[in-house]
Every structure is written in structure tokens, then in C-alpha cells.
Length: 226
Image 1 (tube, rainbow, N blue to C red):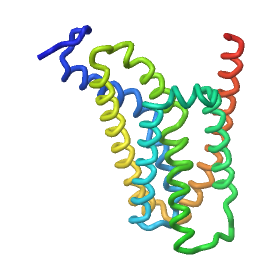
Image 2: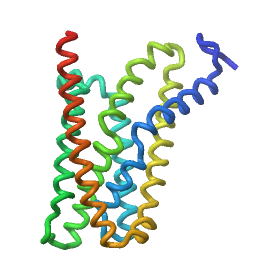
Image 3: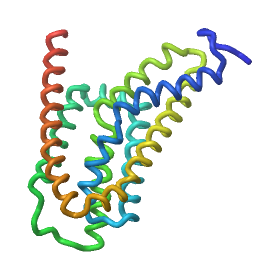
Image 4: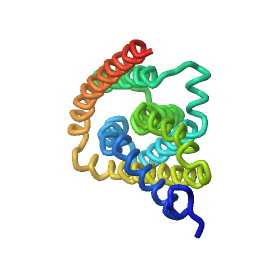
């Protein structure tokens, strides 16, 4: 079997790309940290509805990762966006969601059309972005994309395939974790979920503020370095 310049067979290169992608991306994505948020945003949803939201969130997250894998560098360069800028934007989004959870609307309006729209809204923001495919995950993908051709000039397509498979496996793991929200919600009950929603809302505000601080710090660090 043909080997590349690094001394590895195509199967080994593909396997290493898959394993490295999962090992790097899964801890940063951390679907277990998204699980309380998912439960808090779907407190009274039926199991079928939760499954739809979880699937949509994971599909959106995978689409974002794919977009940044192939177009991330071009998008960032074209719009002049930096990773600190992405962190600050993510922090603002997380903070707004946290405030909504900490101080919920006491007179929500119901309706099937509104329910479906709500599912789509929370599936993309904040579940897919910035929870699953947040600044950390996207920056890892962009960094990997910028290094693949340089590190594997002969078999970079194989490495790209391994990275894509690794991202798909990571997202499937995230979907499996979010699917476990139903049994946990039944165990907690309405009052437990309400308490958890407010607690996690406060934590989200703290996380959002931390994202903002890190983004501002990184921005000034880049400015001084430049």
C-alpha cells in the first residue's frame, strides 16, 4: 500500500485524521455542557419535539463546521473578522440568552406555527451556535484547514475526508447526548427544570461575560503584537 512522505499508509493517515479530529473537537464542543441548556430551552416540549430540535441543532452545527473547514479562512479574511471578534459575538449571544432564561416571559403566546418557529430559533441559536459550534470549535476547524495542505501535500484530500468523518462522529455523539434530555427532564419535573433554567441562565450570563473578556483580551493582545 502506498505511503506518503510522513511514512504512514493512507488508512493510517485517514484514521489518524478521524481520531485527532474527534479528540480535539469533542472536548471543546462538550455536548454535556449543552445538555442543561437544551433542557432549559425545551422544558415542556414533547419527546418528539426535543428530538427534532436536537437533530436540527446538530445538523446546523455540522453545517457550520463544514463551512468553516472549507471557507472559514476566506470568510474571515473577506469580512476582516478575527477569532476574538467571534468570541465577543458569541459572548453577546450567550449573555442575551442567559438573561431570557433568568428572567423568562411570564405570558408566553402559544401556537403551532410559533412552536415550530421557536424550535428553529433555539436549534440554531444558541444550541448550534455558539454552544456546539462555538468560537473554540470553529477556530480549531479553521486552524486545521489552514495546515492540512502544508502538512500533507500529497494526500491532503484523504486528510480532509478524515476530518469530515471525525466532525460527523463528534456531532453524532452530541446528538446522542442531547437525546438523553427526555429521561432527565422526567426525573427533575417542572419545578426542577424551572430552577435549573434560572440557575443555568445565570451561569450563561457569566460564561458570556467571560467570552467577552477573553475576546477583548485576545484582541488587544493581537493589536499589541501587530
